[in-house]
Image 1 (cartoon, one colour):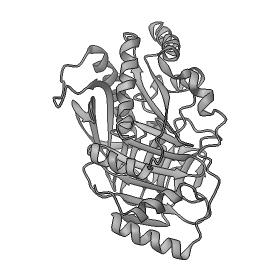
Image 2: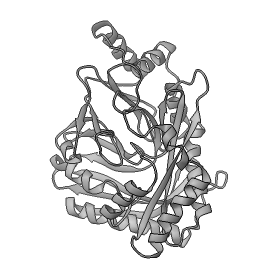
Image 3: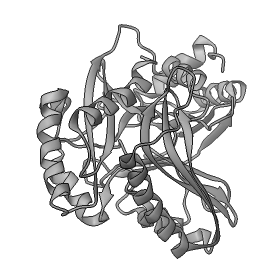
Amino acid sequence: MNLPEQDIIQRIENLMQSSHSFALYRLPWTDECILVLQTTDEAEILTDIIQLNGKQGFVIAPFRLSEDHPLMLIRPDILASGWEAISKALSYEEENVTLHSVKRHFTNAKTTLYEQAPQEGLEGYREVFTRFITLLQKKTFQKLVLSRMETCTLTEGFSPLRAFVKACNSYPRMMIYLCYTPQTGTWLGSTPEILLSGQEKNWHTVALAGTMPMQGEVMPEEWSDKNKEEQKLVAEYVRRIVKKFGNKLEEQGPYTARAGQLVHLKSDFRFNLKNRKSLGNLLKELHPTPAVCGLPKEETYRFIAENEGYERKYYSGFIGWLDSEGQTDLYVNLRCMEINDGKATLYAGGGILPSSEMALEYEETKEKMKTMKNIL
């Protein structure tokens, strides 16, 4: 994907200091980006995933809904595909609508980057890992997902849009997005994991778990028992939910799938959806999958919120285009970063089982963070 002209770059980045919400995204194995821009009113705030039933727009949903981190729906007042169409749409918008500037406040969350800092680094991770593994070994939980964050100072003149284009060119297999609302701030990500995609009766979701680094340009195929068990737990959960909402299930996998310089174990689930007007109900059951949370779901969901040591915000939530009457493409928000006041906060996590080793799990988070570090 080529960089757009400088005036398009400037116009899009000006939106990140306005009262208007937008998303720019590119689907895997395509070379055309899509702009969703809301120019009237504020993006819609939803308090329950079920409220997505019958909706259309770009969704950014947190790992855990709260007053500070709501589910946001960006209405497509402008929907344009490709730089030429985006340029025309933005030019028309500037002539006809005043883009009101707002003070740059990327989040109103009570937990700031600096309050979260102790969770960063090896020692902070070790402390939380010990807390997690103890309950796994006592068989309180089957699986937990432990994540962490890391802040980087951005170089002067850093351009989120240029980083977006670099990610598009670096990671053709992934869904790439750049999203801003005054409530959520600016998020940039490159995610390999479909949460839900499809149209009419034909739908698709995946179970993605287990991680290994690439061996140069060779995909490793020998998976450890720990990775196989992790994938099995996620697949069993997804299969059960799909059977509840759909029929004519076709399953493929698990197989090794590449995502940047990492590989994962992946299973595809293709099915007929019984009622596409109830997408919100299906999404509420799917999210969060054991790939980002744990098992049993509700108990691990609460445990992570109370014991992980920081607020995930929109990391490991879901993001993408929703349209119950047309095509939907929603992804789990992995390999992402929050851009705020000259800093980027990177997020990564991994599944923890009773057999997990702290050093290996921490190394996995470092490898996952490289996806975003490589485009900074």
